[in-house]
Amino acid sequence: MSDATPNTDFDVTIAGGGLVGATLGIALAGSGLRVAVIEAHAYELPGQPSYDDRATAVAMGSRRVFEGLGLWRELEADATPILRIHVSQRGHFGVTRMDHREEGVPALGYVVENRALGRVLTAALADAAVSRWMPARIRSFEDAGDRLRLRVDTADGERTLTTHLLVAADGSRSELREMAGIGVHETPYHQTAVIANVTPQRHHEHVAYERFTDDGPLALLPMSGGRCALVWTRPDDRLEETLALDDAAFLSELHARFGHRLGRCVKMGARASYPLSLLRAETDIAHRLVLVGNASHTIHPVSGQGLNLALRDVAVLTELLYETVANGGDPGDPALLERYQAWRRDDLDTVVRMTDALVRVFTNPWPGFGHLRGVGLVGMDLCPSLRHWFARQGMGLRGRLPLLARGGDLDALRAGDRT
Ligand SMILES: Cc1cc2nc3c(=O)[nH]c(=O)nc-3n(C[C@H](O)[C@H](O)[C@H](O)COP(=O)(O)OP(=O)(O)OC[C@H]3O[C@@H](n4cnc5c(N)ncnc54)[C@H](O)[C@@H]3O)c2cc1C
Image (cartoon, rainbow, N blue to C red; front, top):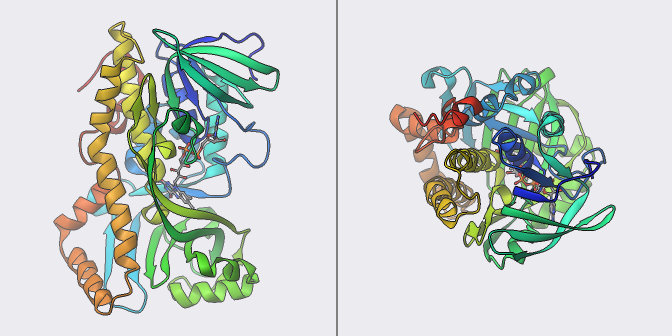
């Protein structure tokens, strides 16, 4: 536990201090609300599941959110810009390319290592006016009139806390979601993402490659020092075999699928694997409870959208809570939670459906499908308005955006600026 004599009455309690929970904690720190973050894994210890070996493609809209929270300047030191995106499929014709110049933005997105995200977020959270409980986990919660009463297991034994609003940011296997009795729609992809950093002979020139192969998509994202972050989706029944390959054999399998656009890979780092499924909570709200991030929606990493989507959860919830503070309202008010869910619905539905469709269409083995996909890729390459639509969607700049994703900051939120 971080605080010597912590308060036990809060306006907002966030369960999970990973990428999403920590960002929300930082965003709410200056709101005037009493905020607690309860995290099960101490940040200092290895094995923290959110700040691990992965690298994350942070979209332009998410850069704005981090800017609005005053975090981007530090993150930028570790961020590699994505200037172009190249989408292709193995064994069939058809390529689509996107370029930041066409979209009038300095970059389509940025690749940041999760450890760098973790370093910046945990330092900012430690400095923020937020009560941190770590390692700790909520054992149970119950209605206590105008608030919830939480029983929390901490290193010093069980503690009781109260809160007006409980935010579940505790990841895909959310215990809070289960305690609240919220069901999920889950579809396993029977695929596992294998990640590793690789260094190709040729510089990536800030291009992000997405390549669809008959046994799953693979992505190579540009990183510093000419390295690329590999996210290679393997069917579950071939995972063991892939993980057992020595580096040389692994890279030769990779080349067979990716081709030699970047030459041969001359170096590679440690591998890690992540089983993949699509998971969507039946509802994102319950009595004084809201689900955000992976607890609400866990999607395939194929287009690098999971965290970007979640940062829009954070930005919308932040905006509604700042407004509530200004109006002297209750942070757990059902009307506020309904507004949150209604605002998030379109964006969540669009991204979840698009990501799922992409995986299914590009792994469909039916004869003739490869040809159709090729027509689709060429059509998009030739049609600027279609490309523009996808680029804006991928950058998180479409639809009704919260102030933080439109370039506003916390001062603007405090001032009640909704323009
Ligand atoms: C291979 C891979 C590549 C990806 N690449 C991208 C990408 O390029 N771009 C992108 O936008 N997204 C990407 N994602 C998705 C992104 O990683 C997730 O969206 C993001 O991690 C979600 O963060 P979260 O905080 O909601 O959940 P998590 O990262 O799972 O964090 C949950 C936190 O809650 C804590 N916790 C768990 N249970 C409890 C409990 N009971 N009490 C208290 N704390 C608890 C955990 O310790 C953890 O700190 C990728 C995902 C994968 C698997």
